[in-house]
Amino acid sequence: MTVFLHHVRRLLASPAGGATILLLASMLGLAMANSPWRTDYTILITWPMQFSPLGDHGPRNSAEWVSDGLMTLFFVTVILEIRKEVISGHLSSPRQIALPLIGAVGGMMVPALTYLLVTHGHADISRGWAIPVATDAAFTLPIIMALGQRVSAGARAWLMTLAIFDDVLGIIVIALFYGTALYPDALVAAFIIAAALACMNRGGIGTVWPYAAGCVFLWIILLNSGLHPTLAGVVTGLCLPATSAGRDIKRSTPLETTLSVLGPVVTWGILPLFGFMNAGISLAGLNAGMLLKPLPLGIMLGLLIGKPVGVFGTTMLVARLKIATLPSRTSMKTLFGLSLLCGIGFTISIFIAGLAFPASDTVALAKMGIFVGSVIAAIAGWLWLRFLPVSVHPVLCPPEGKL
Image 1 (tube, rainbow, N blue to C red):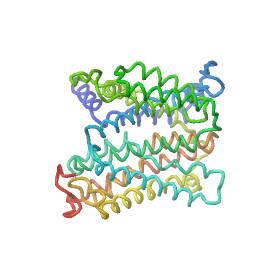
Image 2: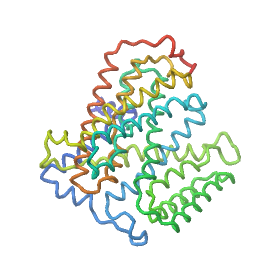
Image 3: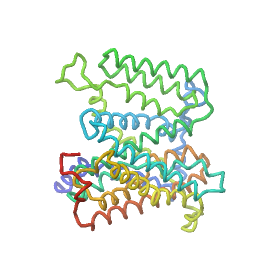
Image 4: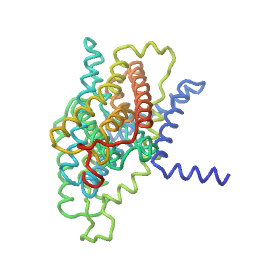
C-alpha cells in the first residue's frame, strides 16, 4: 500500500498527473453517456442553475457554468503562463518569441483551410473551421516529458510555448467569430472596466483582490455584450502586475501569487470537470463509417495533416529566412515529430465545437472527429519521436544555451 501511495504521489506531482486526471474524467463522462446511467448524466450536466441577476444571457445550467464561467480561470492561467515566459523564461527576447508565434499562426491557418476545403459545399458546417486550430498542452507535455532526452529542453520549451500561443489565438478566434450580436452599451461598459484594470496596473496596485473583483464585474458585463465572457480572464491576466508592491523583490508578485493559486485549481478541478461534462457524447446510432462524413473528416484531417504541415512548414521557413533559429539541439526530423503532436486538440477544440454547433447531434460528430484525430496524432507523434535516432542538424540547430 505504501508503494502504491508513493507512485500516486509521484504521478500527481508530475506533468502527466493533470493530463491523466483530465483523460480519466473525460472517459468517465463518455462512459456514463453510454451506460444505464446516461439519464443521470444528462440530468447532472443540464442541472438548472440560472441566476436571474445575470440576465437572459447568463449560464443556464451546470455545463454552461463550467464552459462560460469556470473556464474563465483557465484563460487567466494561460495568459499568466505566457507573461511569465516573456518576463523571465524562454520568451524573453523577440527572436525567441518569433519562432513559436509564427509556427502557431501557421498551425492555425493551414488546419482551418484544410477543414474548409474538406467541407466545401456544406455551408451548414462551415462554422466549425476553427475546431482543429488548437493544440492541447495538457496532453502534449506529458508525452514529450516521457520521451526524456529524445526531446531537448529547448524543443520542449518551443512546443509548450507554441501550444500557449495556440490557446491565445484560439481565444482571439472565439472573441471575433463565435460571439453573438454585439450590444454597444455593454461593450462600452466592458471597455471602461478593462481600462480601470489597466489603470490599476499602471497605478501600482499590487494586491490581487481588486483585479479579482474587476474580473467578476467584467465577466458579468461581457455576458450581455455579445462577446464571449471568458475574455474577462484574458483581460485580467494581461492586467495583473508582474512586480511586487513597493518593488519588494522578496515578495511574490500578484502574477506569481495568482498562478500558484489558480494553477492547481485549473489542473485538478476545472479542466477535469470540463472534460467530464463535454466528452460525454452518446455513441448510439454512430459508427466508424460516420468518420468519413465532411464534419468529422474535416476536423481529423485538419488535426492530422493541416496542423503538422502548418507548424512544421512555417517553422522551417522562419529558420531558412534566418528570422529565428530552431530550438537548441533539435533536428528537423525531431521538429516534425513535435509538429505531429500539435495535432492533439482537445480542450479548446471541444470548447469551440460547442460554440459552433449547439445542436447535440452535430456536436457529437464534431467531438468524434476531435477524439479520433487527437488519438492518432498522439500515437503518430510518440512513435516518430520514440524510434527516431537522436541527432541534431549541424547548421540550423545551435548548441544548448544559444537559442
